[in-house]
Image (cartoon, rainbow, N blue to C red; front, side, top):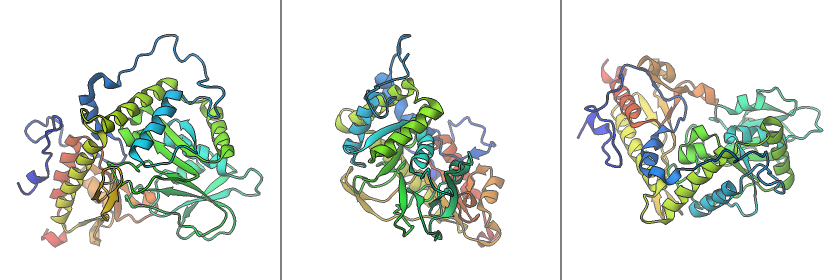
Length: 393
């Protein structure tokens, strides 16, 4: 196969869209601006009733899950399955951490900022992250105009003396690069956003072991609509303050959502241990590998665009070497009239997110790799059709 046809989905894992059976309106704009993880529908549709859970009318009446636990609204089943999955995958140390559950990791970011911000300082503590940083960090930090903290921009250029908070997203959103702290200061408090530190996206090189680590079910399993995230926190006082933030803002987290998330995590762990089940991470990694392969084929055939490259790393979970296949593609326009890459792609009905939203240049865009196969196929066709001056047009 060659050309555009060679970039179409060719996989027997589940019924897929092809030019012959795709009935979608191909004239509509393909929205790849956000990380809506609908790619995972193909796996969960095959699971059947393994994730079914029933609630009776007298369930979940109390605010409390366990009044004796520091995070008193955390369901014990979810706590158990979070610990189990991290131990199965080996991507984080959980035994000496408190677990704080939140309504997605976005709420936990706010809770962590609240907990780590000194209450007795004369001015808000600076919050930074290295460019390109997750586009939501500035808004999350400044949205309520708190006197506790304020967004201070790029960690690479940050030179202010005194305390600060640094977000370290690893693998990074938007470019998928493995990150370490950047600011060289002795008064820093670090928040590790590890939403994408799972085997389908990157090699698990060691179990993460930091003071504050954030995870979300959205990018781990694809269940973004369940709105469940969790933090692993070493310090008891920080964990207590984060729990207080959750208590004041939402009086806990939905028990139904927690119990559904617990069941989903249980099934994923089972799939890794039961040879009769299809391993969730192997399946997802196969999809991501295939998508990145086909995207690179399109980009290599077109002189307009460049993609981020990733080194081979040994994965402790899969026991082999492979390169990262991030949830987002960080696409770079090669210059000239195409320097506003978001605008260029929008003209071809591909909606992406400009690099300027990530503190970077407008010649960069972030593109979600997690859409349904139908959308991904159309995206590749449209990207292939874009021609630049070097192609004689």
